Image (spheres, rainbow, N blue to C red):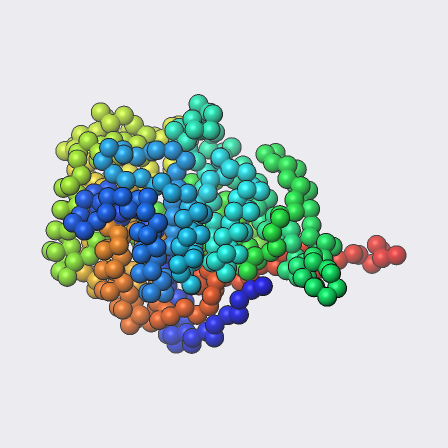
Length: 465
């Protein structure tokens, strides 16, 4: 059964659109040295209580969702910083039990999973959370993950995305395989399920053969929300076909606006409405009572990161050997896409674009990136950050943001206390939740099952006996 929707609040008369905010719970925070801050818990990366506390802060501020990234291998320098460790759906189920409204988006790769397992896992999360689940669809390009699944190298870029497209289609069909009213539960009549409304999907494709049906009734949202992150041409096509929210990496307003326009045009060309996808760039915030204080916090965090870490991380994003980089030199001129085009296009392009735009040395670049790779960093007062967010939102570069505070939970609390009230004063962010599901928060419709009577092809006159 679906939960009844809360009575919606009236929209702000001048701004009918509402800003969407997620928090990406990157263990201790986005900046690699966040775990070293006074008051931080170095073991937070593997402590469910840490993630629940961050979710409570976000839910109290009526954020759309918490988001969890994932890796299938150790792909960072664990001698210095925490890594993504806990499996997302297990962790999100724990967060679901401790929260009531906030959405729960987890990452699962199409490269090293099977559609039935993922369909079942996220349908289960949607059921246990009362309709708050979202699946972030990714392909996996790194070699350590490939080796953990018996391969010497990752599949090539085009093959990964072809598999991902078929994977997403199969998962959506499995989520649809029970019609909404298939479950009967008639105790007096002894009828449990109307089996005429439970459908085998009988999928046979290039990568998967899946009979179905799913062994779960249709979920409160019909389907969990499909999220995707990718800036390559293949990634944009995958998003245009399947995604309902997209996490992007854009360093400039113009780049973000062009990306949003292109993605929504691609979706419209495929017969989806112009409002079918929410575009949510990543945004790291470093806040202070004054701009000087914010910059001091940024500098203190960056200065706590060893140069060797910066060099190895940046080299990994660029797909080159660390010895090709020097802290006080600019990036090399000849930088092709990593791994002959088989690496991560999105972060590579965002990082290189930022370096070229400002003529930065490596030392300057890693400071601008706050020790990360690819995502935009805003350093300043709550007023400056609120101005930046409002500008992007009101002028077509974003429908909201996937926030990555510098440190957690402190950086998120600073954002909630300082920036959220300013966004509400402008009338662009909700004062309270207006519904109960993640689809409600994103303003997305609940899809019909493709097996439902209204979705089935009707017989032509000549076919009627």
